[in-house]
Amino acid sequence: MAQRQFPWQRGYDYFFQLYRSLFVFDFPDALAQFKENIGISVERFAFCGFALRAHLQGHPFASMSIDLSEVKISEKERDIVFKKLSLPLLQAKRAASTLRGEAGLTGYKKSALRLSPCIVLPGGTHLIAPLPALITLRISNGIYYDIVGPGRINEQMGKRFKDYVAMLIDGFLPEFTVIREKSYAPKKGMNYRSSDLALLSGGTVSLLIECKAKRASHASKFAESAAEAEGLTDLAHGIFQIWRHIAHRRLGHVDGDLEFSPAIKGVLLTLDTWADMSSTLQAEIFRLAHEIRQAKGAEIIEEDLIPVGFMHIQDFEGLLATGTASSLIAAVELWLHDPEYKGWSLWSVHDRNPGREPIDERPLFDRFPKPSGMQWLTSEAAGMPAQERQGSPR
Image (tube, rainbow, N blue to C red; front, top):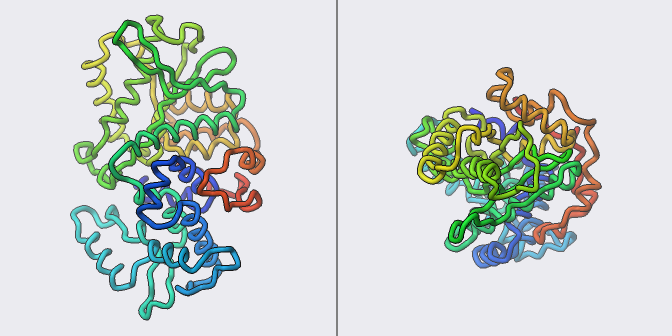
């Protein structure tokens, strides 16, 4: 249910949704792969898609030959993007019928509108968007479909995601010092890496964060049981990595110059909605993490098994406008230990005791580096005050 409902509660038409994806995909291999597959750059694709979304905000239809020269979009660019974002009505019906014919509960089946959010009406002169917000999703998160393939794409996405999270913390929560992952070798031939991010405040490290950019398959998101889910081992390794970091710090292998809080916690921060509020999948991920520990972490003892919570990036973004270092640490403590909040998202827990009134995020947006795919976006269009957004899902 969470996988079906919460993304719509959070919404898609806001700055972070567009910025996050275009930031994470902003590296040479991805940009080149996209242009080779689609025929235009990510920047032109996103701009033209944004123009179509804006037009459909106030009009029920869009002409397939609409003149967009006023905003410097050529006919060629328009035709490429409109074709990529749409399907003719008959073809859309066939695609929907095929997807609906797959096994599983009706409410959990795929939608043809995710890949092609627009439908070209009979006659081929106009298109409509039954769910216009899916255009924003397709030109942001949906770019993944156009760059996925062999090579190091996923690895580079992971690095960009870590950069993104560190940038958000530096910008919104400057009371934290962000310590990035480091390589260390206790003995020759024994090479390890610390947690992706360690958050230092008040002289102590209070949070360890592992960032996972791996995409969740549709089957994993809507699995009725843990046995049906795929790709959980990578998430389990993130938990193991946090536990191993704690153990190796205790043994003096890493971070001997840092003070770790006795109440230190871990967070597994995901780019996709993997185990979003699913106790069944989370239990399976922890089971796999303990298996990895038994196989690879003999040095990890019980006291190293600190609590680790699962958080989707949208929940993290949602609490930043009202967050401080102390309010985040306090919320994590309640989130992982207070029975009242069992099954809640961290954003929802934090909303109960925010650290400050919502700040105006727009000055921060102006300071963030602009991804190559967003060079067209003006500062006036970028900002949406936090209080105007949808509330956090309970």
